[in-house]
Length: 431
Image (cartoon, rainbow, N blue to C red; front, side, top):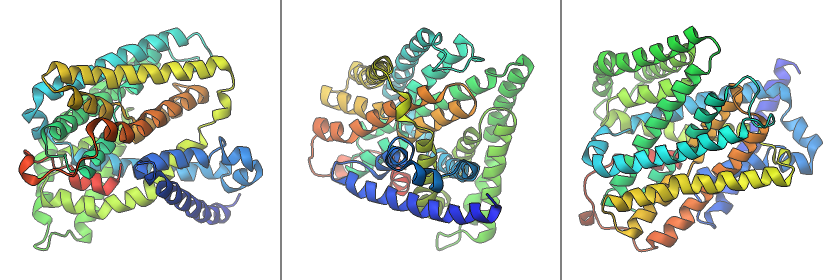
């Protein structure tokens, strides 16, 4: 296909992607699902699992292989901006305020699912259809453990915001545990991507480079980035020059971590975490949140859906494996976090609520899975199984939350405590 044909096809692809995601999102609301959950499902619908099965020739015409690099590039820009905004809302003060409870819940939400995922991977490594041949058993165990440990932090924030409990005790604990959990999981993934290199010197350079990047951002560039707060005008806006400078910093951060062998989204997340809060963070979320939510993130979901082939799970053994993965995911994340919350003194209802929220994987899981598929750690079969797990655990979150916590009215301001600072981001991302 010529460049002109590819661009022409891109406009039609984006039209279909946006339309399907909004329609599925509208239908999903009747089942109590957030927009991001519906978009995960819509992505699978547009791939070979449904659209390709019903009308394969039309699906291949609309999404030819030649257009995949373009959709991939757009999805990566979306992920970089998305993770930048997640980092922008990473509130270290929130963690310090609930360190004991959040730390125990987060540790349980990392250690238990990581151990279960690692043991499962070691048992599955002998199956050539799940992990690529060049990946060692240790690397497969580390990757699978990290993939089982992730939490859909933005979705967690969205549910708490919609219910009006983001500033209550259960809200602050859940948000603190979720943010700490995802930060640990991304650091773990960065380590895995660095050590998966066949050349140990490349791996060590990536690990060392990643550490230098984080230290430089926190101690050297963070004070410089604080000047962005001064560039917000009296009306709470930023001009084109300020916006351009911010985007340059974000893209350079993404390039830096990608260049050293980790991943672009890690750099974007750290960049966001080092940006100033206050008016600057608010205006950035308002300006970029809607574009990221409405256009860029749906492209990523569809790109993931195009790589998801339910038909690859074509035997009883593979569906049995999918069931095992789902059970281990729920037990390792949801149950473990609920028990940890109970052990720190939370009532049973609040403990199970926290476990339910922490169990959702959402967009964060799809990011990890796409990284694994792109870097050649897992095959399309295991990718599909893990996508099924991500969708099911995410779909479970909202209904279980309403069933456990109840559909009582939104809490009054006097019942809340503290400020999480996540409402704007949660509202902006809808995740």
